[in-house]
Length: 318
Image (cartoon, one colour):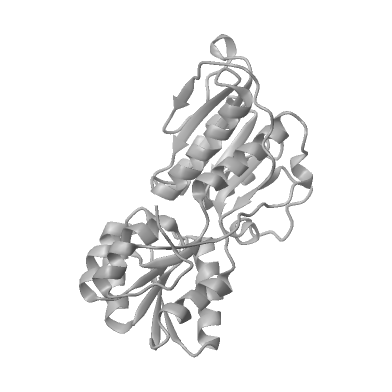
């Protein structure tokens, strides 16, 4: 974790929450910095990252020294572009792109305003480019070693034979994780079958199909599943099929265990980076993607229901 910057002594916050536009400007604008926050959709991990980001910046600049303009795209790519365009029109000082769709929209829309991503697994996959150095884009990643995800399945379910790989085909980072983890699992001798859904409308039917042919289901850090864990839980728990998910929200909603990161702390780290960029201490064009130490967590209730004993080294998911 990077060292926190020294907070300035300021007060009173003005937080503007908008569905699809940026911050106010002109005579109504406050002194200090304005940061646009585009969140891909509503689910606990993204919300925690946003909360950590804002908390860090308020601690650093004080409530009068930082202003937030927020937009939630509710899972719609086109809404991300609209929100980001509003930020640019209003001249925000920095954009936080919370998850892949906002990152793609912001990176496409501006090459001058600093863009920090968070809750993004693999930036190269999300942006279809190998190198970010020299650009206005950097950020933090929720990626944990994917070989460890596969090893977790082997540790908890050594007698399983088939693993269903459940993911949204429209999320590039989900595709990347499924391909990578699936490769590791096949090397371990598991038979892996991908089960792709296009959106929340067919999540239930695809989950049901996966349940019928899988001993275990693996779900990556998939935002669509994270926003609809109840749909998955209502199918997998009665069927007795355990889920290992890459996201703590998936674990708490429908899973049994995962290796993940603390999204609140991920957001705080991103906020600290944003402060360094805003004050000129750090040049975003030279800033590498930042990571947190992974955590092993488990869902005590689901493990008890499914008769799963988790070995030492796992903490209860929050």
